[in-house]
Length: 351
Image (cartoon, rainbow, N blue to C red):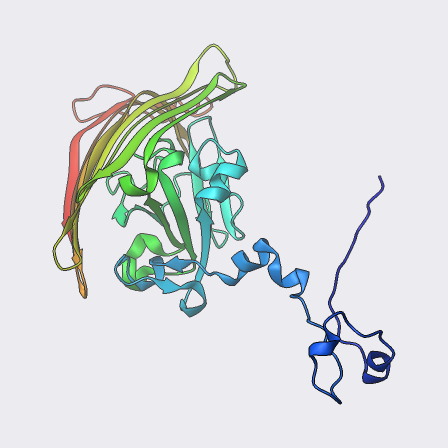
């Protein structure tokens, strides 16, 4: 391979060499006794667009208590924060959020089945990892009853994501006990930032399909975003068997109020008729989870209010490892073997 590199630099000649230069065409316009001046053009290095981009700095909200009205620069953040932009996601070729997070230094991503991911930091990763708090637009999607995050059930598609902020290190003082390893905040785009329709489709081996249809815009003071996503993949051990299949529907509406105030309301659900995981110690779980949510945010200068509601169901079959199935039996409250049904579990929070 042959590479040709050409570098252009501007320079100012020493006075003795300046005296040897021939007179310029406009030398007659110079005053008597003065040496003609050579106009110095800007350095090519100073005009490179990429260097101008490097001068800009991302603003983050994750280290300031999740208040979007009070963002701060990364250099001013008291914590170690890493930001993944929408361009990073698009260029990565990833089909899910855990794969995107693999690029973050210090973040550990472990996949046990086609559907079961565990994400953590600081060497604390494990099956059903529960020390990393995950937020979508500041709303926790941590399932308190089971102590886990179903990463394939996140109620957001990749084209909707504006950026992902990753705080590595203990943040329990601000966010609670399950932020011991850090916080991941997924920030979505508003309808005004999308401006039109977006269609995405991808596929691969193991029957992998990932698709999304999004439409967003703004009419007057009302911004809106509507989306639908579908994902599925086959089992690693049996290509004829599905490991997971999930459908997602989301709506997000933003209304600009007088006095720089804004009201944002969002809601949606994710429903799966097949979800292989999680794998926990001596058992494996086959489930059909469903998650619905509603979120409302009102903000203005020096004031922020959020309330949200989440409801999830997890009918599941628990399979004990065959090597020890003679000694352990799992039953539900009615005595039925190898089944559990967490129906109607939900939570509401006001901040």
